Length: 87
Image: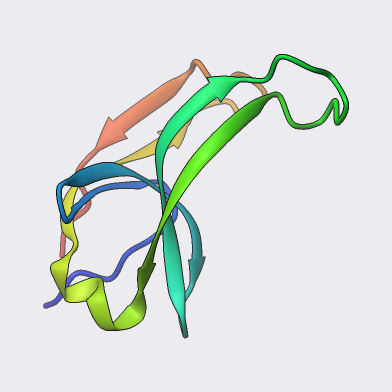
């Protein structure tokens, strides 16, 4: 079975690696390759800057799955569990 990307999968793509951050199953996905704290509080709900890389659907065959993450408690993002999905 071929790999079908999901949000919160950690993948490698063309020399970069990171978490699948957004997924549009018809068009593309984004890979979060960097995060840094914001220096301002102009939009309080957004606490960090995210650097994202686009990967179009026709390139998904180039994605290399590494592992996935899930949170045991959605209100505590430090409570993350890493696991490997089966295909």
